[in-house]
Amino acid sequence: MNSSSDLVSVTLEGGPRDIPRTLRVLRARVAEGKIKIERHGGYEHFERDPAAEGLAVDAGAESPVFRWTVRTRIAE
Image (cartoon, rainbow, N blue to C red; front, side, top):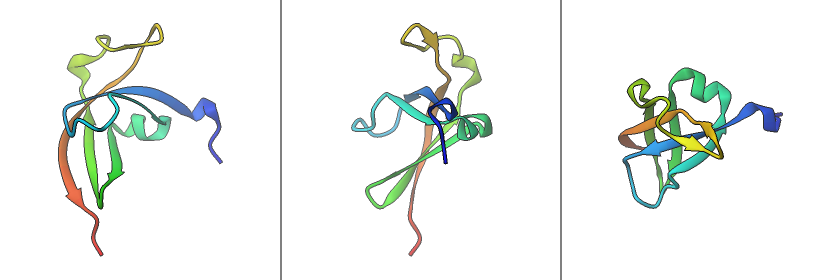
């Protein structure tokens, strides 16, 4: 089970406009440098952007920035 201490806020750049710009995800996913969000029968893929580190601020704290890379469909 995941506790709230396992969650971290991240900033998402690019991708579909209806995905919230700020999202809370598991620390493990952030550590991997990739985030995959299930959405409308597929996945939106984001990768960490080290060049943007320190630029996003969420509630007074820096948040990692992930940029959209691709959308894939869920295999049936």
